[in-house]
Length: 169
Image 1 (cartoon, rainbow, N blue to C red):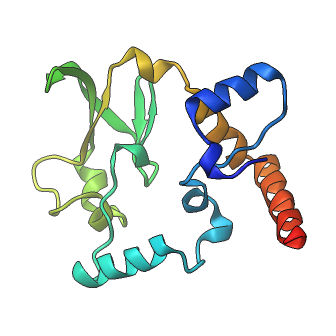
Image 2: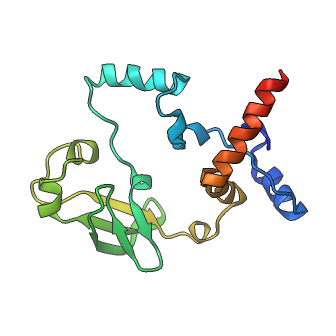
Image 3: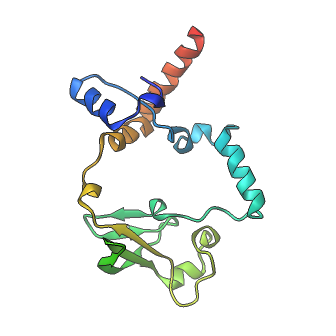
């Protein structure tokens, strides 16, 4: 195991090709790990200040909060509702995207609406788009390590090593 200072594409590629079973956390690991949900980290304090400034309004969902299956060309919103594909190869800023739109009937009654949309839906549901990019199809070594350390085994390994390091100090 290693701390996040060693998490780089070059290091992770080297370790993957070396055959060692490595666990190297990235600097966003704690944000994804439910064990750290209530910890008083810098990010937690930063989020408290943001909530105070925004009068308690939650942070809006980004495209990363939606489940896009490129193979089946389907998308689920954070509430689990299916969305309809409203465009393929939509051009914007010299990029091509696949665009999805939430069904108005779902978005109007959604309990996550405040976290998903700036204003209540009137004519259309939430829209989200995903890059049509070859790089999306190939997982980087960083992405592969995120999957590995976010697994129950990966979290266990990092926890055990962390405990061992704390006792050594």
